[in-house]
Image (cartoon, rainbow, N blue to C red; front, side, top):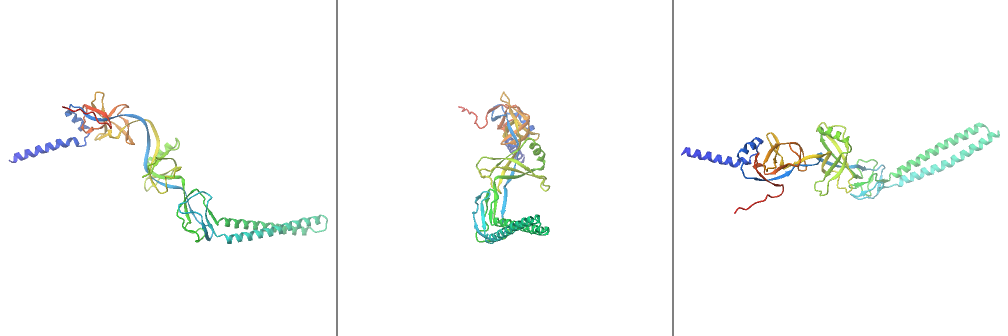
Length: 385
């Protein structure tokens, strides 16, 4: 009885192994051994041709959008805000009036400086005429030279006073200009922190409003330091293209140029910081966003490509099943350089125009007969009566 139970268990284990064997990830050696027991009926498989096409050499990473310029608007004088001429989130142009500050005190100081200037100009004119008169009298021996020297000294003193008065007028005009705060850039305003009626101080720690320039705009990203030599070499051939896609944005990718490579590698992370500039005409990029960034180094004009699904991996590396003209398959080792947009770039092992299997590899072994059909199309089926 015990011998019967043992035989029954061994038979069950053998059946389970036969059932599971085709589903195990096989190495090329396993596949080759299986070819000796391959069926004679053709196995339907999906195939694709080895194509030649331009393929870019690129890096993909995550980037952060940063404003082209950021200005924290502050007052340069003390006073009361008489009017805020913008609203939260408003677009502004360079030179637009943002805030008006009480200017009555400064205007009074300006008028006083202008009056002093006018008075001293009149005194200077009189002193210059006195110099002319005394000079004429000296020529006629009606006055001494000392009198002329005194007249010249008085005129020179008044000239200096007039220049000081003019400087005071200029300074008052500068202070008066500070009572009108204008935008230095084209940009978009944030929250207006101090509306009308608030008191401000010169160069206070808080800002009245923050302006961000959105057109153009930057996208900052980082790459491993090992890629820096390739980036620098590619830059010698001309500007590098950077494209970005925005999560949740259905629009097409945005194209920009790499405009900055940092002058040092971050030793804590082993990365190098880079920055690309985008015109952002439609303002799809917004400061603070996380975006998908692709940096293109170059484009290989005639790269051999196959669908990623055609490439299998075993103990000895990557391989594909190639369909021969007699509809049998050959297992061939390949060298894959990279994968781009669902396609593998093949360095060696294949030739353009060959057919490779993209579906049904688990049922194949070298030399098996196959019934190929284009990928994405179902094979023709026949109904047996």
